[in-house]
Image (tube, rainbow, N blue to C red; front, side):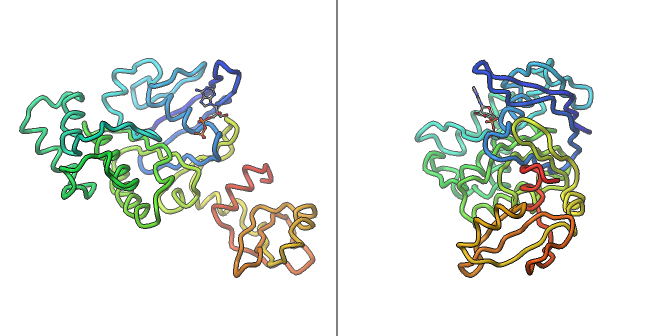
Length: 290
Ligand code: ADP
């Protein structure tokens, strides 16, 4: 099964062109949609989730035309939006039961079994009687995954799921997602490179509504291998280096800036070859260096 996006464009009524002729395919497994804030990720996710209409183009999943067959799409879709509202005081168990009913699981016994299994799966069973509104960020996201899995979706969309999670919560969430991604298409939209690095077998990078790269993270790394160089400099030198070189990233190591630059040949000036990271790929694409 493959999700095929063809020449998709979207301009909001205020004139912002959020997607510009985007074309790529998403195979089964974990797929990372990476881009900075404002890149157009949510717009794309919401179009695929049938919540927003595109201006032109098509999205096809197997024999389903997603832009036209909204009912069919919703039946096979699990969606975890960037933010979802919860009713205060309603327990996790009651809320999942309610969503399962809305999604057509009519038998009470069947719902009970399903809800219990889902709560176990996302590790919230012991908290099942607590109100979702009292959950921590990580627990909420895991609850969100549980609700998105009701109805055995073939396509799961998670929009910026790890923003605001602490490292422990993020790890638990990664483990959960990677289990899900084995037989279905999971699209993970994120501005966090680490999410893609740890989870995804394929990815796309978008910026300003345009597709900049699509392929496997490893191939992306290979594409810039040998052209990334690093040097530890002092803070006051940073400005000069920024002017002189194509600086991709700067991070502080022991209080001193370690810069990564992009260059075809080894620069003079004490640079050494750097092991290319997905961050380097991301920024070199975003800055249009590669
Ligand atoms: P991302 O999810 O990558 O942060 P979005 O898809 O939310 O990006 O936004 C893409 C662009 O469209 C941004 O410039 C944003 O300001 C704009 N945008 C998003 N939603 C709306 C809307 N409802 N009306 C007008 N502009 C919007």
